[in-house]
Length: 331
Ligand code: AQP
Image (cartoon, rainbow, N blue to C red; front, side, top):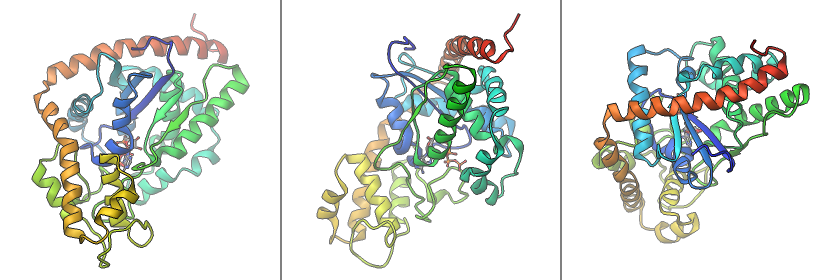
């Protein structure tokens, strides 16, 4: 862990609600898988969570719950750092320095800000400058790779842009990080509106599958997933977004190609296909729920505390370089 001889990974998750199948197939599963090859740092980004309306007690509880689910799905505290963003104040300090060199035009193009405010979020400065804080999160650890879902593609581009601007102006301090985005399931769609992304903030619970849902809930939600009236199972994102989403989910859970699944299910009817999708999702998530339910809150807190101390040491080392390069070295 953090041995600096291997390329480094950083990624984050907002403690803003239950973690769902979309985040798992798009990002968190890779967090666990990449631990052997990379020096891995995973962060519960609670400062980002403050950019939308929230209840302090719920945020505090969600930080523990999010860590619990991550450990349950395979993030191993012996191999990865796992802590809350707020445990390392340098995230905010570096965000300020990067913000001072971020053109507003870059932020004006961000689709996530537009989407969130269109859905009712307050257009506050924190939400607007979210990509700058995200860039600081990644660059603070001089990360090389960032495993995320497709919705974060634009923010990774901003991070790369800010790293280049910084290096050109102040000297080569930051590696230019790459996104690590899966080919299948990078954007898992809502079960009730398959042209929208599966999302924690969707008020319709039926739109998603949470990682700790009971098997009967998972089956019910997949059975009631919105599809179409043509009975053929085939992949067509435009005309059959619901079925295409289920095919992608099944492919991601089984490792089978979409073509192979279509060969088997093209003419079985939607009922049989949906039950088969439910079976593989239930099988995929069962060990996560079991591990989650066995974890103790106190143990999870201890992991966050210990990891945060190590993360703070790494962040301090980067900030020494950044402060010296930018003319604000500490006396
Ligand atoms: N539907 C999705 N498909 C694939 N990947 C996804 N991710 C999120 N939704 C999907 C990826 O999960 C990681 C953690 O995301 P997050 O919880 O920090 O942030 P988010 O993108 O804000 O998640 P939600 O569910 O969409 O929350 P709201 O509703 O608040 O916007 C990221 O890598 C993300 O790409």
